[in-house]
Image (tube, rainbow, N blue to C red):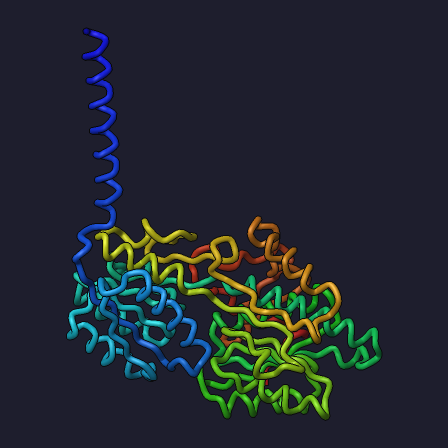
Length: 398
């Protein structure tokens, strides 16, 4: 009988333990009837590739949470109007607000300080840990230099193929880049791209033209056309529209020119010239941040990535950076295998692109230089890029 009683006690204890564990798991989901309001401030709309990527994340949140989340969206908001749009979301009782353009950062943090009950998540900014740091203001970004470097390798392989086929000469090993502003985010990106190109063809040089706007189709297209006329064989971009891709496709009948995109695949826009694109996958951070707010947890404890205080970033290892479709019709031989090899190398932390016999010059202070002989560890202290030096003798700013 004692054995029977002991078995019963053990069985009961086991069942109680199972129920306790099950209730613990369920408690992580919080009240299924709970609803939170989530706001989004976009500088464009779904027609612009940059904003379309954020809208994908918004859709993922809507799919995951259903009617447990109410989304409030402000689109086509100029940076100078950011504070007004954010205040509108505050007035609409949002519990979590995503601001998605660099220029919103100052206003978002200012309002976060005033409204500690609301969580603010700012993309592509680096001010979360600046004083005063507040627990309800966060920054995040994918480590996009990784994707830009791989895109540059593909571009370099294409240049080498063109040279081998005598479609271009050694003097034509020149790439062009349409950048938005001379910010570290843009400079880091085009530097990583060129270093990828030069890992294949060390003679390649780059010309950069700034549009002084994040999203203007006509200006971006015009700058790309100028670069093509100046002899650039491959055009890439850190700008938000398809303008440079269209310029390349239109010019292909008269020029040897190819395109490397950003934010989305541009093969459908430029089927005979667009080689490959890279993008940041915002889904992971934005979905996990929403889960954190919904379950009353600290955002940095839920999001998987490289944490820097109130800032989180990640690359290929967390699927925050992605390579888009490779255009098999025009891609150089071996490009697909090389892309996969490099992705795996980044996942294993085997590549540090910012290294070599280069001197970088601060574009705002010529006395401030950096020697890359020992390398530069991009994104070591923040999700936002920090490399803001123009490589002497190999990059020309026009």
